[in-house]
Image 1 (cartoon, rainbow, N blue to C red):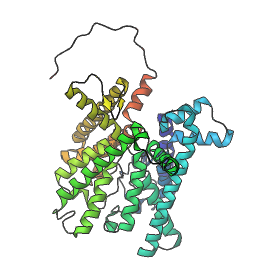
Image 2 (image 1 turned 90 degrees about the vertical axis):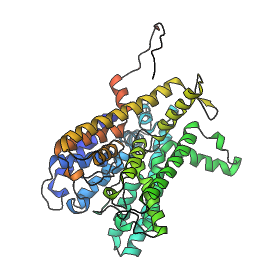
Image 3 (image 1 turned 60 degrees about the vertical axis):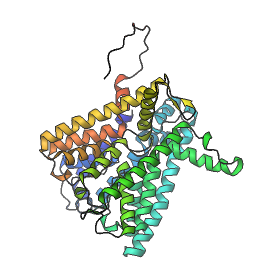
Image 4 (image 1 turned 180 degrees about the vertical axis):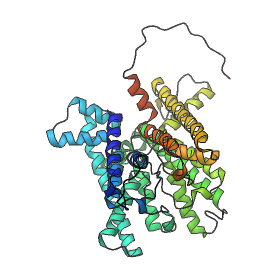
Length: 440
């Protein structure tokens, strides 16, 4: 159902973007270009083959905005809400579908979570849009509804980690403007943490007024997500600032304060945001490699971010630590990890890595471009990030199809596709004799 929902949204978006009314020139857009843009929008990626500002008309931009919102909230979340509004009740099947998309723990929470997802998304987007619109109008002279439209578009794109911007240079022209960069950064972090984490934090804040703050009462998922997300963000910010500090093509010409602002933003944006305020193609290879790792890991589960997710990365690290210590089970923050969770984390990482390796090899064969640029593009597509070294428009149609598949897989998740193919778990009624092959 999830795969079908995203596929249907992609088809609808493609058909709308092909129409002459969607293009600024009022001409028919090439099908592959329309398909790539629709997938990039509904998968909240941000990779583009044509300039969003000059190619698409207002209608086309609104179609892209709608696809971003639909993709960010989740097709099944919207379908669940529609069922609530029409029938005033949600059946078991609809609750299970909603649970698949929002990854709620208890079946009875699905209705509350679906409504909460909508409320939280609209609230964050409205607050960020208000700040951005005010800045566009006061600081840059954008008049009336156009300033509001700019604020809304970039707020929705930021919260949903889509990376679409209405400027040819993304956010390069606003690189040193904290009133633009900081709200967008906050929106992409909130959206990237994941709905379960945000809900638990807000519930904890409400209870804090009565019972006091208790970190240990947070779920294991929330604690792992917050700690790992924070650590990876620090690593990303420090790495970008350190490697690019003297690079004349990126941070070199800026003052110290602006270097910290721009470097901090580019340390966060690889977590699947997709905006850039620097020329990514001018970055050092070491910085691109750090970005590759951050894009592959992504953000929090059940959020707008892509990648294998920070919880998956952290769980795999805990498994490795337990194995090194010789411990028979994996214990994390006072809890024991189930063997099924460990297998799921390993499966997600290996499938994700396999998708990236195969996509890179195919794209290298098709384009003949250098490894740094191709690997960056592939990881950006799989992680639904949207950052690019500038080669997207030069990739031939077969290469674009490869990126489309990677974006679709990256948004739905390797484990979701594997589960859809398997359809059901198969129980083993007997065990074979144990034997240990040589490892290493």
